Image (cartoon, rainbow, N blue to C red; front, side, top):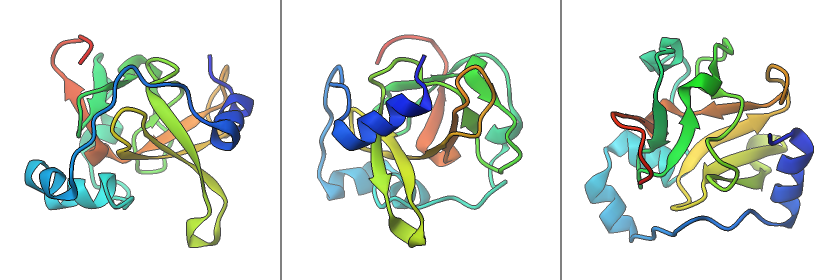
Length: 152
């Protein structure tokens, strides 16, 4: 189980090695993604809070990166945070997510990205439910619910 101290260590000292890498040109990403998906995932944008019904859906399944299909979160780790963005307590596996210090907007936060393609997913905070105490605050447009639970 990943804890806040692990998140801080990754953000300071480097992330776990991903299982694979996906790298594409900006033009290729623009062709494959909607304007909103591109703005959020490739340009580190944020969707409006409560703009997606994903926040209120808690059916079983796996959420993957919209850009590269890497499995990121199990719906069993999803919870209602009241923030307006889908929230999870743990990634599906330790090396699925990368952590980066983010000092934008006059704050110090930890950004979370897909460790395979560097897609901006959101941010992580130490105010989630126990036992991890973590809240992965994700942009719904960065995620897609997979029909089958297979490794991509």
